[in-house]
Length: 353
Image 1 (tube, one colour):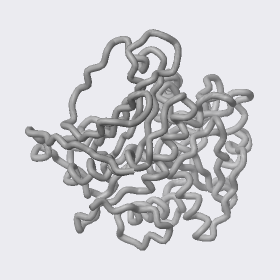
Image 2 (cartoon, rainbow, N blue to C red; image 1 turned 60 degrees about the horizontal axis):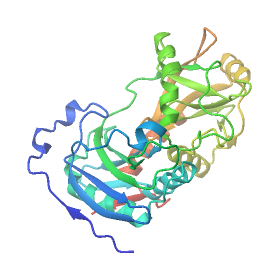
Image 3 (cartoon, helix red, strand yellow; image 1 turned 30 degrees about the vertical axis):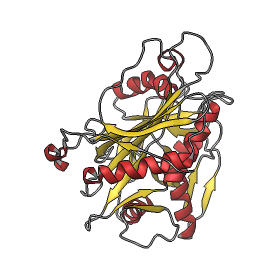
């Protein structure tokens, strides 16, 4: 499938005003964005245009019925100026998984990858090269019908937007185990990156922040007995020497960073234990020293160190972070791998030409 992409260059680029030392996550955007439109039968009018506002009718089905999905991925640059994407086809596949659940059309890999490569080639200079920094890439799809009727839209718009990013969490975080509100239920949309999933999580997350935590650990919706995932990342624990994490399901997002960390751990000879983790079991294991590490894994967060887990008003502190811990080693390894500094034995990185 051959993809023709028209390019309209930004005549007033912001790259000259771009300061890598003043990056605010999700606030600054590159000079260009990619757009493709679905006309009810096929994807058409693939184009790269200056980043700017959209003209959207107020009856758009996206506003009213929440047909909107997205992905999160990153581009990295090394000291030589070489730029890389990390497992981009995994993001394309997961976007289509979300699309199926939300009654939306598939994005052909050719549209996704060619649009991504041409956009990255055009805005490559926006990729920061500071330690811990990257270019955050947000592919997303939304309903495009102007119609106030409860049905799937017939037309859609797919876009790719990019924003320079530093560390999502600058310091180890405090998280709270949530046992009142639920993020997802069996049979629902928890396994899709649907926009509404995140909207419903904002209120309980705000309550947790008012109590001094930065994030929530979600539990199962039936009993609030088992650990699922955090608001912005999957969760992992070093438990009796095993890398332990909840299995993916229809209530847990199949994280690409999660998948990568597990593959690397197995390659390093570390035993991986994918199973349901009981809340009481976890807190008892932290108290008696059986859990030596807790951390989140995700595209935005990468490896987010956890220093405290709160449950019902009681805080359970994890051991202080040291350089010999798995979470520190895996973070360094992933950083070097994504920037092409070490051999890519997994064939995960894709260089941007």
